[in-house]
Image (cartoon, rainbow, N blue to C red; front, side, top):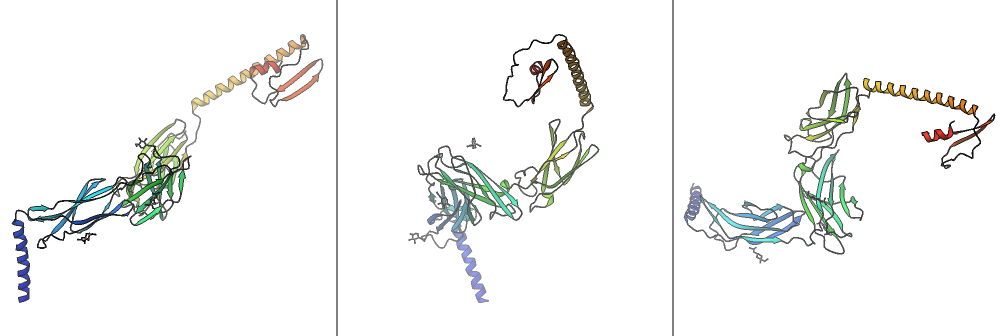
Length: 411
Ligand SMILES: *[C@@H]1O[C@H](CO)[C@@H](O)[C@H](O)[C@H]1NC(C)=O
Ligand SMILES: *[C@@H]1O[C@H](CO)[C@@H](O)[C@H](O)[C@H]1NC(C)=O
Ligand SMILES: *[C@@H]1O[C@H](CO)[C@@H](O)[C@H](O)[C@H]1NC(C)=O
């Protein structure tokens, strides 16, 4: 009993003392000491500091306010004497910290202490630019593909190297694609340590080297959901019943359930060169098409925002073809007209030839010097036949004979 009341008395008096303190107009708070920033990984720093050893120990409830100045302004409070920050570091990093106290309705704060990391060295315009990365879930693994452009001031002997960090895992690229100067401009990781569910951030670092100048590194952070490209839908089938086209498919290979996907179907009328794009939820769809035209159709998928923030569309599925090109009445009619014209022309030619031959029989030609053969390099089948008084040369051209040739060879 006595122990209990003594304890209660101590607690109450402590609270009263603190309350009395809060009534004071000025509470002197001293800034923390030994504030340091340490790089602990790609785009990751650890901030730490110590309470000021000269701070009045009677003051309880002391907290710290951390302010990130570079690269992006941010601030937050913490009761701890350390903190972590994920930020790109290629422009340097600077932060400040102060001691604070919320006391009833009053707020007290110390002066700030600051620390910074210098930007890594490198000539302007030498870093990789326009870095883009895409992840893709392939059976049990998440693959990563990144591409970038060479900085406009990067010498031809520049070489770039890419690293990624997800959580505590860091990996260097082993499989680069190169430009014509042999500089790395893309990277492919067939498997990574990246979370299959697509939560969290991916840090990517591209640095480089050259014999001529220092190459500036590039850091970039990606939200995984924003760069995860889902796979296309699978088992897409289509069947035509009359003029109605029925399409069915299954959800892409993914961890996400069936109801998480939205689809887009692209139906292309090949003859009319016209395509129709339709957004669909669910796993089947039907529409009316012109069955006398051949159509190609393909589909792609994306994740619905109810399952996660919108990301990229998948690639298109492989095209499948439906319908067949039946000639319409108009083309049938055109074809008959063309055939009739061709027959008529052939007939006329035949008649003209016969007339010519009669003419030559009546007036045998004076033997003339050899015909001019324009191009002997043609592989002509050349026949010479002697028949009666006239010498007949028959030259059949492999090429389609033009009118000139007809004049020369046929009489
Ligand atoms: C701050 O750092 C100095 C030098 O490293 C050290 O002597 C001092 O004890 C540190 N102060 C505290 C409060 O840890
Ligand atoms: C990089 O992207 C910017 C803006 O999107 C564009 O203007 C620039 O041409 C791109 N650079 C290269 C080398 O493609
Ligand atoms: C590039 O970055 C990696 C990872 O931080 C580092 O190990 C490597 O030494 C750097 N290379 C160059 C050329 O700066």
